[in-house]
Image (cartoon, rainbow, N blue to C red; front, side, top):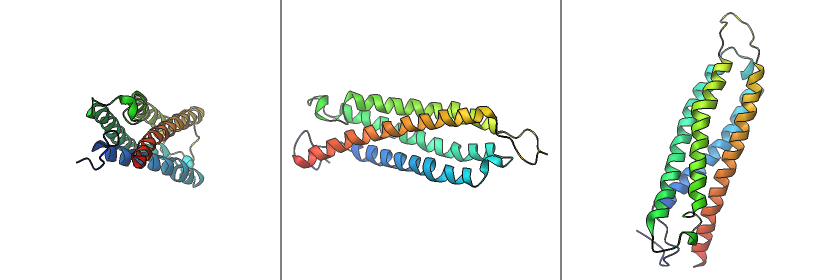
Length: 176
C-alpha cells in the first residue's frame, strides 16, 4: 500500500485524492474566472434579459462541483492527519494544522459562495419584466461581482497554499 520505505515519506492513500481534487478545483476555477466568464461578459451576456437565470444555472453546477472538491480535500486532510500518530504532525505539511485550517476555510468559503452569493446574484439579475427589450444591470450587481471575485481570489490563494504544502511533502519524499 505504501510505496516508499522511509516512515516520514510514506504517503497515505488520500494524498492522491487531495492532489487530484486540488488540481481539478484550482484549474477549473481559473478556467471559469479567466476564460468562460470574461468571454460571456464580452459576448453580451449581461445585456440579455435572462442573464440571471442562465448564470445561476451555470454556477449551480459549478458550485456543487466545488463543494464536492472541498469535501474530498478536507476528508483527505483529516485522514492524512490521523494516519500515523507515532510521527509528529510537523513532519508533513499536508498533515499540519495549517492544512486542516485551510481546508476548513475553503469549505466555508465555498458554502458562502454556493448558498449566499450565487442566489443573491441570481435574484438581482432576475428579469421581472418579460416585455423589456434590454435589461439594465442593477447597481448592486457590480458590488456583488466585486465581492464574488474577492472571495474567488481568497479561494485561489487557499488552493495555492495547500498545493505548496503538498508540493513540499512530495519534494521531501524525493530527497529521502
